[in-house]
Image: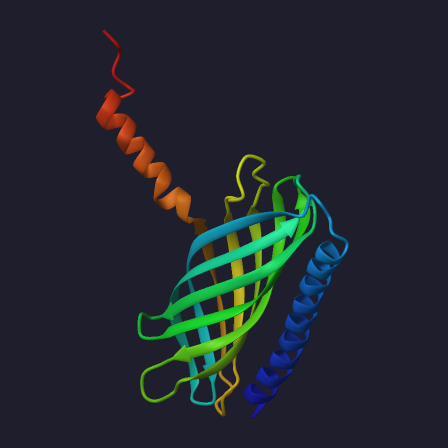
Length: 209
């Protein structure tokens, strides 16, 4: 009973925070678009997230591993350290047995040059084994390297995150996870460029003739 009470209180607070984040992000985005700001430049980010945590349900608590693909398209000024907001997408699997998709809104709050807080709130649907499919709400807090890319609409991202998921079905299970998000360009394009240079120009550590 105590576990259920703590879970319900935690989820109520989390839902309030998630609603506040979503409303704030939509308010910022509406202000930017409504004012017709000429420099509301978009910055797209796509990252691979990996981490783990725990699932708390009536049946008990169990560990979970997660792998996710996360992306936001944030609008704001054409410089670093400005508030940005926009739509967000979260595609995730837990323990490689679930398939989950969620959408929502994100808001980027500048803290230190190029290192902001990013708050995301949303909802989605999870396909799970054992006929336990259902809707869920989520909230994510992330902090890390998110600079403004003045030469491209794609902005790099490397950050730590903490996420809470709350089941909107009868079970009302709560998942709390944390881990790291690594930009897809860091995982694919940059290694490919290093390989291309090595194949076409040779080992950079070897002295030239």
